[in-house]
Length: 372
Image (cartoon, rainbow, N blue to C red; front, side, top):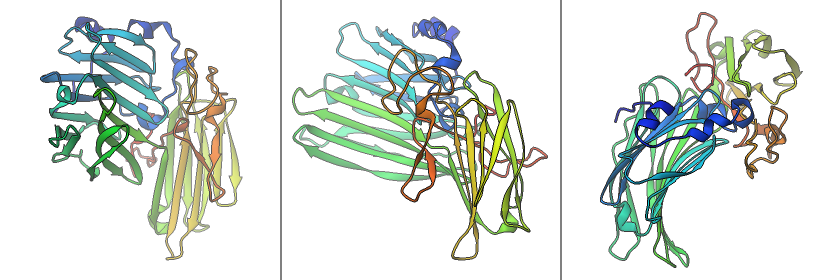
């Protein structure tokens, strides 16, 4: 399935309008991290009400929802219009379609009166790592004869250079109802993103819920010899106002250390650490932590953890990460301490990163927000 990105102008033509987004300053509203922002959005075709509904979502540079198109628009009208949440309902009020972009997740979901409203084939597509080509995933929703949902995932077509591992769907049932869920794990140059597809039926009223979620943390892990890891690299992201920023560093093969080469886009402070380097752009929560350590097998592990997108949504409280105050100083942007004592960015606050050589060729992932 080929996606056709549609901004607000196209949304007006199809009656799927996000006029409310124009009222929010981009810098104050962005709460989506770079791994999600750099996808540019995603598209899902949902089996819905005996036909199919295509939901095409566009994200701007810092991860706000910049456009949503429903095809066909049918009798859906917008009920909620925010930079992070857009919700539609049909005239009868029996079916809703929602898009959410916040933290490390972008989701498309729908609720309706019965499982039968979702039975049939659908598909999903996104430029998962910002490489310029879509990966696609077909799926089919059905039932097991007892009213419980079933899910099948078809042949996945990852974009060039991306590996895809299917997580076989599992079916569960309990006092609250029944569900089926499965997904795909995408990997690219040490970066990982996960797609989850789930459908559930409530025991109480038989209402059904379909959700498709792409999630991605800002972490790259590469294990190789020092010779293979050596050389100049660049981490890229965006400040809350959309300013692109970069941190240049290199792996010194002789010393087996990380060396700071400079930063662009805004003033930054670099702090050497025992096994690497921390860099933070002054007065913001945007930054990167880079470490290099020897493994038991004699190889070296390079770990890059980035952070951005903690800009706050002034219209709501971000339960995933604390304060919703605008600007880069939001508490939800703090790195959180992991069990091993190191600090890692949480889902709601991490950013992407990308390693490139000085001549512009890529020796790492596109999982950075510098380019779309």
